[in-house]
Structure formats: structure tokens, C-alpha cells
Image 1 (cartoon, rainbow, N blue to C red):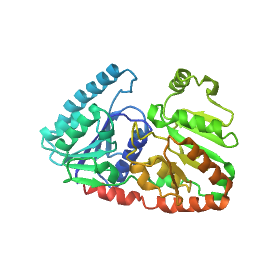
Image 2: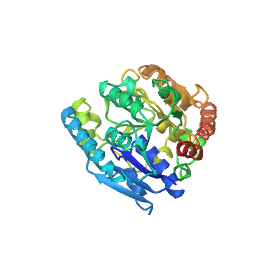
Image 3: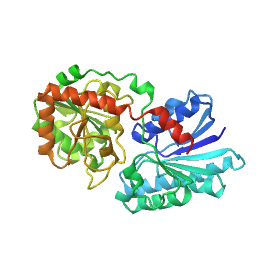
Image 4: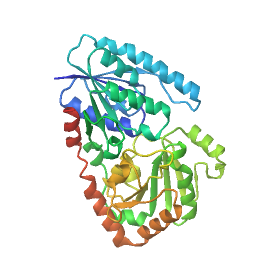
Length: 362
């Protein structure tokens, strides 16, 4: 049985560490010995009860200052590069690199002739030069690259050793979701889980809430309340601090299931001119509760949705069209019920057992 050494830069409650947690938990239950190298705190720390997991932690957080962010990132790469050599004489080791960012241990792994597997969540080719450089290094260093969508894989220059494995949700998560289309329709609630990055569409979501005062809007932001307040102040939105009227804003949450169980619709407003979603974890979480979704028209996230079947693909800059579609869904119970039932059926295509099996054989 292989000994897996997994490297993940920032352990928070966003999509990539949540997927990593599901994968590692599946491997741990099968008896794989795992060393996990990541920052302190976050969803990955929920694995610490497993006896066959050993975690190596370091302090790390993002910074809005580019120079400070690069300095912190570089220090972590140096630390994990040298740390990786503790497995130099272990012949059964596989280096599992989650996201593009842990390039230091990937380089160390190749120097030690270890098998290096990347789980590639981003799309570097619609980002800046830094990510494109990391993607070029990944294609040189990786023995196997696991992509999360066909869209994402289409940008890679290499085709050998590339596998498309869509993300999935653990059974422990989906078992807590409540499928009740009638109650969901009556709630008339729109949910978005996002971050403060400009391309995520936070301001557009707030605008939608103001244009649709008859419906409830819930915004869960993956950041601290302090940073949320600062963002609202910098964008002249202090009048909705903590929410306002029909809008409620929440800071980072360790458990998002109650939000899915109390909403009617989940939307993603990522601007494809600034960033493209390679996969849609929040739409998948929503559909697993039978909640229809509205997503952008491009990217891996668009592969998950069929118009007028389980949701809609709409240009996120066209708020008029999104507003109209929300009204239509919330005023037509027969339409909503059909979308809800189809969403639940579509979610079953993303099976965690199949995902884990494909990753194990990568």
C-alpha cells in the first residue's frame, strides 16, 4: 500500500480543501497511511482523529499586499521543499499536490524520483503570469494531472497523464441535506457563497437584492467579519453592513449545510472576463439538496447545468436576465418543482466512490 504525502497551501473552508478532505478521508478509511502538510486551522483539521494521518502544520494566511503575499508564499515553498526530504528513503511514497500552489514539494518530489500527482483545481490560463508559470511547472513535474472538468483539461498542452475526475461530495455531507421542493419554493430565498475577490460578483449580488425586495437574499462570504466590513466601507456599501432589508450577510462558516437547507436558489456570479470557474462545488452542493442553480455560461461550472432542466446558464453581467429568471422561478411552482427534482437527479452523477476510485488509480 502506498504512503501518501499530501501538500496543500492554505487550509480554510473553500472548495479545494473541502474536496481534498473528502478524498483523504476516503483513503484513510481504506487504511492508507497519510502525511498531510498544510496550514493550521480549516476543514482539513477535521481529519486529525484518524490514527493513520499525521499532520505537519505551519502558520499561513493570505495578504492583500502583493509583496507580503509573495513573501509568505515563498517562505512556505522553501519550508515544504526541505521538509519533503524527510521521505527521501521511503520507496513507497506518492506526493499528492493539491492545487497548483505547492510547487516547492513537487520539485523536491521529482528530485527524489517520487511519483508526483497534481490535483489541479484552478484554470491558470485565464489568470496572470504567476499562475501560468506554475501551470507550466506542473506539466513538467507531474507524473499525473487530475483535472476537475473537460474545460479545464482543454487548456493543457500535454495530454498524456491527464485524467478528468469531476469533484463529488462526501456521503456525510449529502446525508444532512433536506430535499423538500415545496418548502423551498415557499421560502423565496436566494443564496450565494462567495469571497471578497472582485471577480466573484459580490457587488452584483447586492444589486440583485436591491432590485428584488420581495425576496430574501443570503450572502455567505469566506472571510472574517473585519475584512467584510472593510470591503463594504471601501465600496461605499456601509449602509448594508451586516445586511440590510431583505439581505443578510454572514462571515466565513464552518458548516454551510443549514444554508442549503433554508434556501430556494443558489447562484454563482463569477465574472468570466476576470476568472472562470473550473468546477462548481457550491452548485453541486445546492443540487444535492434539490436546489436549482444559476451559473455563468462558460467554464467547468457550465458543464454541470442544462438550461431549463436543473437551472440556467446566464451571462453574469446581464442582471436584467438574472432578475427576470429569478422572478419566473419564484412565481411558477410547477417550473420550480421540475427544476428542483432534476437538480437532485443530476447531483447523483457526481459519485464520491467513483471519484475516489479514479484518484486512487491515477
